[in-house]
Structure formats: structure tokens, C-alpha cells
Image (cartoon, rainbow, N blue to C red; front, side, top):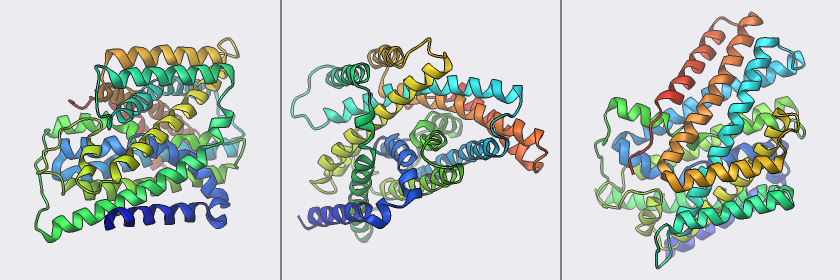
Length: 400
């Protein structure tokens, strides 16, 4: 009971801080809410059990590796943003061709990512139901696809997008309460001598390609690039850095707390295993986490659906309207929903975004080479482009 109260107090305190004028009115903080919402929404709850199950006691290292890799890909995008600012956007035919290819890659990555978000929405949405029916999560996902398509087709997403800060503040407050409760649980395990150090369940190669298939769980930082109508380049670059730093800190603390405290609990592994784990920590946490998951996945799905509509309209010079793009997204998403499982969709989304990141890194490498920048930059960005290509080819799903 006391832990439940402490969790709620922590949640409310963080919420008050985030809504204070000093924080809420800070320009860079406001700018970073978009990438932060996308990163946190990309897989915070599903990632912990995956890493704990696959990497065991090395899960924190795997998490740190994912965050570091995401930051390196982010550095390529930030370099490109600064280059556009310096040159006015004209960097030659090679870069223009790569930019077009990257935009197409991002458009298709959005389509898969929405399927990923809404399948997680369906899984968490039915996770606490007292009675389950066959395919209940898929049916809920299908219904939400229908709602999003209807809203996008008839009204557009502007009103829903304006709720973004509310969603981010609520998610961060719930995560703060969650980490506080989990920290108390781990402290109790530590004092009882109950911490566990489990061996990985995958080998070196399997662990590497599994990590490749999880890039989407730390994806979302690239959204800072597309805030040009609202913020200057310097603010957008800083917003991406801050969002990646804060999300990395949250992720690593989360995985450290999780990895050594549930190895002997025999919780069945699934995409919603975190809910069963949190029943052991505090009675209030499962409901809070389900609320956070639903808000995170829905807001991320709306953002990517809206982004894909505008992107395809721009790429096709209006031949494909945003409405038609929404319909394409729904058709592909429903096909994925009913033919593959959530873990496979996570892998597909990771590989799609890896293709986009590879192209962005290639753009950075070409730009650095053409401008005679420091010798290490073309090499670094070129290596990142090859790594992104490797992730696209070799990324593998979790065995659920």
C-alpha cells in the first residue's frame, strides 16, 4: 500500500514539474518532446523482457549498445541538418538522389512502424482482460486501424497531434513512478540476497542479429529533422541530442533494474510480459503501464500516419494524396497484423528504419567528402552506412 502511494506521489510530482512554466515554456524542451515521444513510444515496455530473456545478465550492455548505435545514426542526421543550413540545401545531384531514396525509405518505414505500434496497442489493450477470445489483440488492432483511417480520411490529425505534450508528460510521469517502484523492488531483492544473474539464451551471432532487429525500439530521434517549420536548425539539433540522452538514461536505468531481479520468477515471455512482472512489484503498476502503453502507441501511430501521408504526397508531387497514403498504410498494416506476429513486425520495422539510416549516413559521408571535412568523418559515416545495410539484411526477430 505504501509503495503504491509513493509511486503515485512520484508520478504527480514529475507531472507538476513537466507542466511548470519553466519546463513547459522552455523552447528546446518543447522541441525535444516530439523525438522523445517517438523514442519512448517505440518500445520502452516491450524491450525490457526481450533483452532480459535473450541477453540475461548482459542485457544492460545490449541496451547501451542499442542507444550508442542510435546516437551514431543520429549524428549523421544532425550533420546533414547542419550541412543543409550551411549550403541552403543544394549539395549536388548525388546527394539529391540519396535524399529522394531516403525519403521513400522513410515513407515505407512509417507504414511498417504504424503496424508495429498498433499491434502493441492491441496486445497491451487486452492484456488485463479477465476473459480472452481467439485473436482478441488482432481484432482490437484492426478496429484501431479503422478508427485512424476514418479520422485521417475525414478530419485529419491536427487536433490529435496537438495533444502530443499531454501524452509525453503523462508517459514520463508514469515511467518515473514505474522506475521508482521497480527500484524499491530491486532494493528489496538486494537486501534479501535475491538478485539473479542469468546466462544469455542466445549465442554471439544470434545476439548480434537480434540486436539488429531491435533498432526500431530506440528509433524516433530523426523526427527532429522535420520540425523546420517551427524551430531553427540549432534548436532541432539540440532537441535530438537531448532526447537521445534522456531516453538513453531512462532505458539503461530501466534495463539495469529489470535484468537482475526477475531471473527466477518464471514469468512467461511475451510482448506484454512486463505487465506480469509488475504484478510482483506493486498492484498499481500494471494498470499504469497499460495506460502508458496505450497512450504511447496510439500517439506514435497517429504521428507516423500523418507523417507518411504528407511524405508520400510530396514524393509523388500530389499524385498520391494523403488520404490514399493512409489507405495504403492501413491495408499493409492489416496484412502484417493477420499474417505475422508482433516480434516479426518489430524486426521488419527495424530493418526498414535501418535502410533509412543507412541512406542518411551515406548522404553524410558524401557531403563530408565533397566539402573536405575532417578525414575521420567520411570514414565514420561510410561505416555507419554499411552497418545500416547489414542491419537491413541480417536483422532477425525475437523467437516468441
